[in-house]
Length: 385
Image (tube, rainbow, N blue to C red):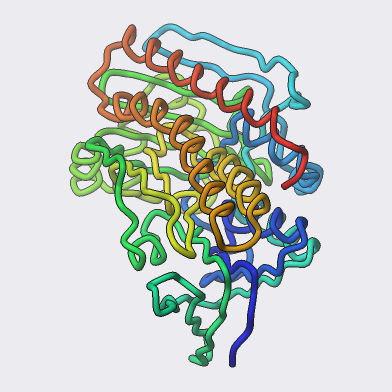
């Protein structure tokens, strides 16, 4: 069984489904494969920043996210020890609220939009190998479905959107341009009837806590610390006790005691950041496959949406293999790196958890500045790839 596509996208979550949607809208023949089932959950910080909401709005899919009951967020409150600073969202660039959709909502919305644009999306399909020409250029993928049946899918371009531990990135030997040293370990869960007003971030020496309103009237609450510190807490007391130890009697503690927990508490080990070279002969990377940063940035989904737009624009400006496409992908890499590296450097320092209250305020101001640069660049892009 063989087929021929302009592009095969490996991964149908935020980065992959968005990229597939944009390329299909541009008239390319796109296959998008995803090894998990449609609508399955995955670890996520949920919170979209302004640039992410801007992309969803420009692509015409934000209404579907709202229709799924995702609550608008118009205020962010930062707690630095005993001090609190609230910031209201100023409407601009067509964004009048932020949103934090569950991945069970956002991923299917984007995949459905890709299918609506003409892309073929296949779930339960894993990529087991890459096809190559005599010159070493990637020319497609080998896939296996849940029945064990294998097939070759040929394409001018294979895009790895398959997450932090990307098969595509490993198979092409994508070089690392940045490797982080710091990592935050997390525990998180969901609560109903937890009264918070928008995004809530709490910083204390050595720990960080967040509360994020999401779908179904739930609030995602996470607690973070240096990876080895969190691992020790979880080993000694278990995930729920670790979360309650870190939240303590402060801003969220009393509310959590009165609220109703829905589901269990999950523990996520920390992993250092990376920035991989995002293109080569016949291949490209997008989302966490190419750019992974500590979740404490709460910027993973936003960066994925940003880079999907940048990559799709590059591919459509050079729709066939050759010098024009190579130049376009080089420009994509340069733009992605210019936006990502300043953020990576700040997030590394945040994830170290060695700051005092003055230090974390300064770091978050720097982080906000990198986000402004991101929005300004996206505002200047065409409405669709």
